[in-house]
Figure 1: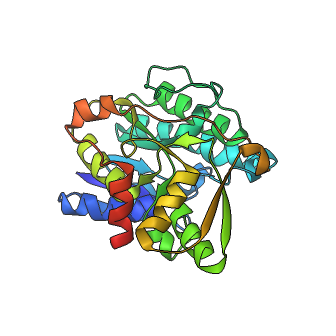
Figure 2: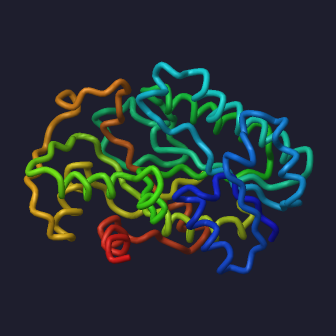
Length: 283
């Protein structure tokens, strides 16, 4: 299949390029220097790749900044996917759009993973912008995959803008004690594993909405503690509440995703988050 990946130099984009190439797909990778999805006038570069499928990994993901930078957040996370959906519909091209667990969050006391059929309820501007993007893709482009995921980390984070794992490794070496929130339940996900799942999903033509994360669930405190346990870094990690870590945007207290639909359609289960983390650290 001829595939164009928007955001090909990001953490997910780089691993998608590797995974899809290994599956013998023909690829075109586009960076933000090549295309701005919020500007349809930049879409002529898409014609050059003659794609049968476009994968959009581009996003405005500065969660706290989005609270005040609404114009840019909604331009990239909502209008951008809308423009791509129109482009794909008019040319009979498939579209895979990557979304987020942050479309949930209103059920703070929830303890059962969210299915695709559960009603979303974002609690911050970033989540609202991503949900609007999802809705527009669903309404406009019949041949769509929407993949919600969580807390991505991948090898490109080691040299690019970083990720939670790399941040913890750096801080763990710099400090004697760290405070990490322990009341936000989610499933951090390896971009390598997510890329494997997407590579399988796109061959099914079973269009629709999917949840895709590593297995199990954890908190950011437990995730951080496991990072240090696996690497042997000696640092004291203190669990704190979200209220003790002030941030501009409220985060979901529970946003674990049920990935059983993806597993049924693709026959692939992403590894448990602890196994995925160990693999990442070993690499």
